[in-house]
Image (cartoon, rainbow, N blue to C red; front, side, top):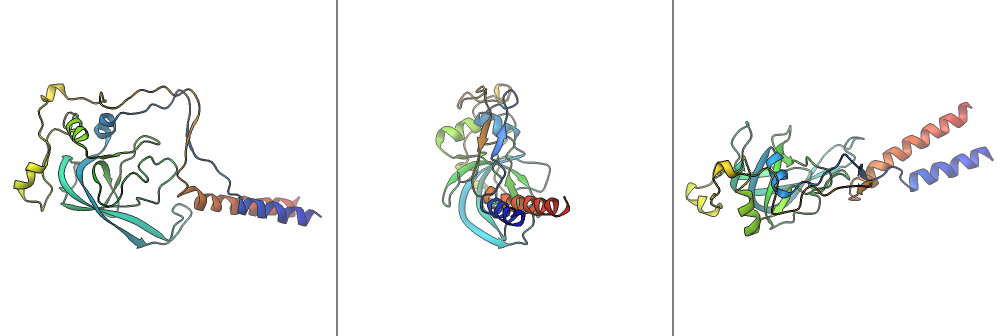
Length: 230
């Protein structure tokens, strides 16, 4: 009877992954407006998502996937550069689908979209979304209003063209008309400082189903061992 109960419990764990969505708690979370998200990003560029690719990778508990989905972005303009090598015209943004439940940018960018996006470098020499705030997107559709707002953000006012792009294409970049001393670090264009009074959960479903299966199997094995040795 005990063995039968153990088997049923193991089956339940494997078929019903445990774990939960990414959560933030009352008093510790604040929504950032677009300007603040861009201001806090390490790198900010404006360009077009021209295609998505897949690389085969070795799965592991920390990255439970057999492939990595990447985006190739044609960079029109560089709003903000880090201390690394100059941004080239064509860059690869890694892991656009293999995100944790905390990602707010997941699903926000499709092939053909023109976006303003906050990025950081990866150890492989590519780039990744610089998602510094839980559940919020760091990619914005490049409407006229978004481009204008981006030129007003502190640290984003020295716009350049990427390496490999003709200098005369600078005309595609928005003009900066705001004096530097009037730059902003938070946004008047999008809402900020929305109070959170309850626990908030974010879930994408892309990451948790696979990652939670690792947790389920681990817990099942622990349970079996406990039963055998009690």
